[in-house]
Image (cartoon, rainbow, N blue to C red; front, side):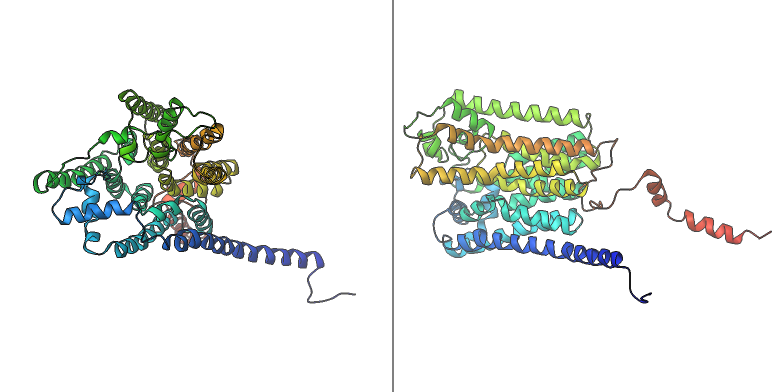
Length: 470
């Protein structure tokens, strides 16, 4: 007996399975983004609100803004160690009360933070994979909460770095130069211009940093009363502080050993305060020498991987790798600087998932977890266990204060993997710029040639139609 109008049982099961799979593929990204939104709002929005009126790092910027408006050098404040351009940039906040300024800066920080994610999402193809990766990194990274709590400038620098990774040549040079004017370590990214022979981008970056630092410093020297430079620039030569997560700081902590069950060395606990930091000249030069050695070794490795010259498709990967290297090599690298890793980590995750390089994706996620989240949790648990900082377990303190720069070196190595995969003999990893199709499917050489001549098929068909029949 035949049943007309009904599909066979196996075909019905297959169709129902496809229907479930199709709907799960649509629901899963929504669920991931919704969960990330929940984990983002509580620690980054709700928790910092109660402390916005309390003194924080933003108070240093606010005082610098008040000094600029009163015609006084911002270096009157011994806690101000930043370029004078920062003081001029923050000058409008000196016109309003501190609490109001802190609220505005808090809201503006969220705008900058989310704008960085938007730039990365655009560069990554605006797909669901990119959206999920960015949401996970932005919500679960952990370092953003510290920046929101203290009111640092890191999100402004993060936006500049995201633009440097994703924009074209001219805007890339402007972004690198602007970041270089805010902090010294983004200047390492200029090495990518040199290896790419991108002299226009290099000239633009140097021009921006010269204007952004030279003009404010000239104004401070000529038109403002008070000191013309920081009281002690040696502060940036290195610190053994427990909260400085870089290889030079690890070396300084090893040279200032802990005594079991004794008090924590004052340089470990208060090395983030300039007045409490007293490094000898030998330790300062040892810290700076370690930084130069790490940077030189990383630059040589990058040069060998790209064979002395970067292609356009490799430039962005080289830049985000150089950022990780510069953070690991910086003489002073506070823990919240790890928020600057977010754009590069998100781009590497999207790329690895796109090409189904699952081991690389897992390696990126593990390195990112050890760059901030896991050390922060472990050190907070240690502090709570012993009711303060003590040398009760030196091995624990040494390990968790040293693992973050090693994770940064790991991220640099993974960026080199992307540089290699984007080399002349491989088209697996495309360029990450707004002018490139980052998530477009790969095509073979024949399809690429056909794409360059899209009208060939039309011409041949017209010729065949025009040919008379025999």
